[in-house]
Structure formats: C-alpha cells, structure tokens
Length: 64
Image 1 (tube, rainbow, N blue to C red):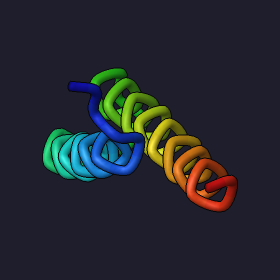
Image 2: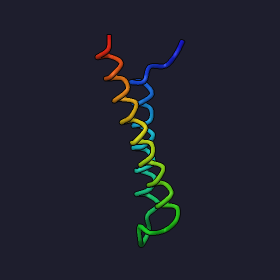
Image 3: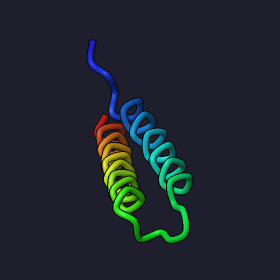
Image 4: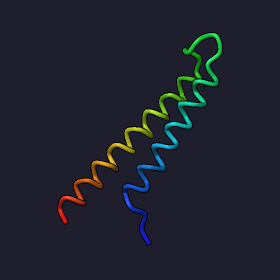
C-alpha cells in the first residue's frame, strides 16, 4: 500500500518543525554557528518538500 502525498507532507512538516526546534536549542551566543545553520537548512528543505507534496495532493484531488 502506498503512502498518500498528504500523509508524507504531514510527516515532512513535523520533521521541519523538529529541526527548527533543535536549531533554536543549539543556538548559543550566536545563530551563525555551523550546527544551527545546518539544522535550519534541513528544516527549510523539509518545509519545501512538504509544500510540494501538498500541492501535488491538491492537483491530484482536482483531477479526479
């Protein structure tokens, strides 16, 4: 059984929120440390994938 794009979008969105949380927790004196930047980049990619999957789900739903 395949996982729907909507379910995958929700998973990626939750992962993005978790990476943002970890990035805010790892920010010490400054936000510009490598760990914080890496976590923020990963969160941005997760949010982008989630938005693309939601758009894909909406297109597929409108076709039917």
